[in-house]
Image (tube, rainbow, N blue to C red; front, side):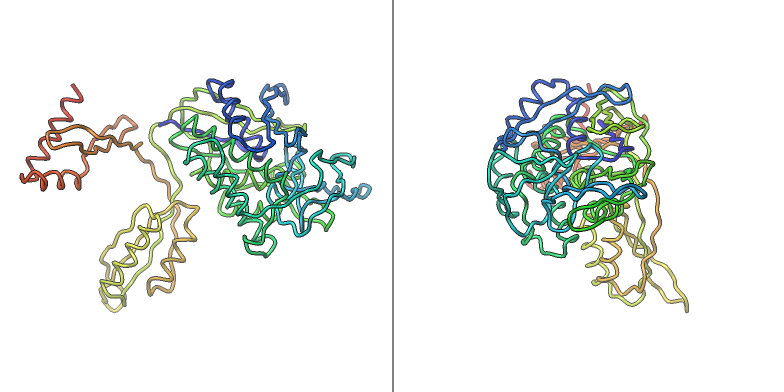
Length: 456
């Protein structure tokens, strides 16, 4: 199975993830051309060589209106270091907070962050120097404008959907942090373009690399506090903390903010497992560099290779039911499956006072355990749900259509760990048999014959 592993020991930011994936592309010139061909207004991508602790990688620079943005993924904040002179106040492009990220960027308006009034004041970046954008008065846009911009990108519909999904996650996090509906969240124009550039770039690179499985390490978020014009906030900032809920994180040894909202949203959207590196045959390695220098290499490392099947962190959610009708239990089971549970099954059990009952078991990804626990509490009569963490080792799965005497039939293939199995889709065989007016066994034999011909 083609697997992408993201090592986030120094956190994650949108441009760092983008640069790491860019390094994995076998045709970097074409990749950079594709990025600049996305058609994001006033935005240009530049891939610059960068060295951290003796490791050579790439720093992805995004310019907006021909100016390099000193990071708009969060907003203008500075690290608070106790027992030192007061930190200079920094004019903030946000309503209530923002922060430095690990790559030295100072993202305004959270790349996306709530803003309540327009302004045309110069603002301060690193070192307190005034910085103005050559495009004049600042403008602010809402999600409707963001969706319109995403729909106009020069990329596939699948990439557009992924960009919108990630941006929606960020907007929901900012909405939660600021206590405002998503419809009232407004983004600074330049911050929006910069954040969309990072998100769209990552989604485009993932489409080019086409990994079948994406995993990541636990995320290092940093520690301490950051100060904005409106006060002091803890690290990780509220929006980042919201996006990382349920994901394994650690503070690490670096004081300051290492993971940004955009980085957190991208990891949440694409990484299906957060654990140590899986057993894999690595084929290529990419280093996405940040701007700042630390005692440790400030980078996201991406590894692309092959794994045998997959190891997933799962949860088994269980509850005993002795006072529900069969119809009501069946409804709850189908609802859980419709909501994306990996499996839901029923087991007859005997409870106290020898009462017959049903054990309802729901298997789901670990990060979705709260969602499915709440569904079980709402749609069954149970008073509590038991949660058991477990790991699943699974075969890699794929499907293809083969030509048979009764038309095309889908065949599912499962392989890995020295095992390979093929199984035709039952519903399609049944439909083909019914359409041809022949017994099911005859149609099934035709599929087996087609599989034999394909193997030989």
